[in-house]
Image (cartoon, one colour):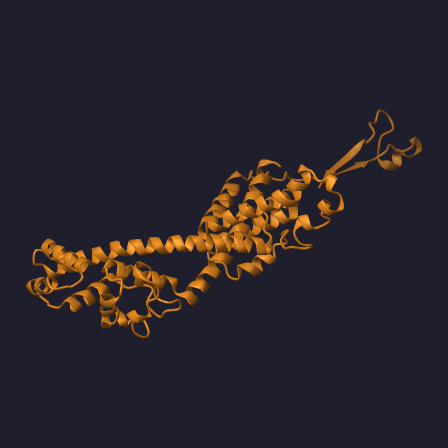
Amino acid sequence: MFGSEILDVAIGLSLIYLLLASICSLLRERAEALLKTRAIDLERGIRSLLDDPDGVMAAKIYNHPLVSGLFVGTYDPNALKGAGDDKRMPRGTTLPSYIPAKNFVGALLDTVGGTSAADLRTAAATIPDDAVRKVMLHALDDAAGDVARLRTNLETWFNNGMDSVSSWYRRRSQNVIMLLALVATVVVNANTLTIVERLSIDDSLRATLVAQAGDRGGQGVAVADPYAQLGKLGLPLGWQGGWPGARGNPLVAAPAAVGWAWWWEQVLQPLIGLLLTAFAVSLGAPVWFDVMNRLVSLRASLKPPETPVPAAPPNVTVQMVMPAAAGDLSNNGISPAGAEPNVANVVAK
């Protein structure tokens, strides 16, 4: 393939990865809406921040009006499942997936009791939770009697703790996305090696994907109904006839004929192609949207300028006037003696 064809194949491949990654993201969002894993991680993170494995202090925070207004129902620590640090809320909880730092700190200070710095210090000294007591006293010392600064210190402490919660969620999400990418890849049989081979020889399909990639770039990373769009591309997807190695298996028909070529075509190539696709798709739709746009921009910058079409030459008509016979010279108004024949009249249109 020429360089431009390789670039077009890369653009088409990035579009396919974008659509598959969008399918996985959509499935992940629907699973999150059903299982509420983000809310579960947040509740677990708050209990860890408060050093409150049984949820006693957490219940006071969650059921405070500043926080309880963010979700439906009440927080019940008896609903926690598991033991020790592994305790967590059941899936499908109605707890919020996000609590603003300002709301959390307000609920915490009201729970501790007191409005002035002196009252808060007195109340903080009696907090049974060792971790919360130390944090409160340290924040009060740093604030030097300024309640507004105390709130800022506690909000910073809360936000730092939520960074850990975000890390938990990202790791779990990445694992889930990787699993979804593998499942989606196998279900649609999106073999990267087969797709590249098809795009390298099918000029029409390659041009179609490049055109759709160009249109896709101006619509944003979110894809409406990515599965339907993937099915309209005319790609070599699906499992017509089953796994390649199951069709006319020479291990049964002619064991002696099995060689490296068969293992590559029927076993290794499909496995490698599917794993490549799954890994690429697990990188996420935003990554492939950015890659696709960059490749489309590169293609536009490398496109040679159009050569102007030269103007057509003027249409020229030549009329030839043959000399008349000697007897007819006088009739044509031409002197017979020493006269030059009227060779041509040229008319340019």
